[in-house]
Image (cartoon, rainbow, N blue to C red):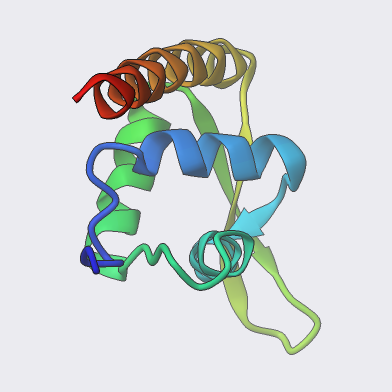
Length: 109
């Protein structure tokens, strides 16, 4: 079984897709969504997720802001930007091309 914490270049795609469906999530909620939506197969660890979020924020794919939750704790929440929506399309297109090529190899070997 492959390592479930290694998303092998798909972390940006997963984060962008999750934020397109569920805006205003904090980092832990994004990690939980990846785990839950993948049926407990994929896991994003803090050590990879937070640097990726910072990088995506610098690229203007996502926007972050500090809020205070119902328990009075500060949380940094993220949402997709228009640039992020375009990047999501690019990432999905790349992913579909790669998975299609892999499927073709699996069928012909």
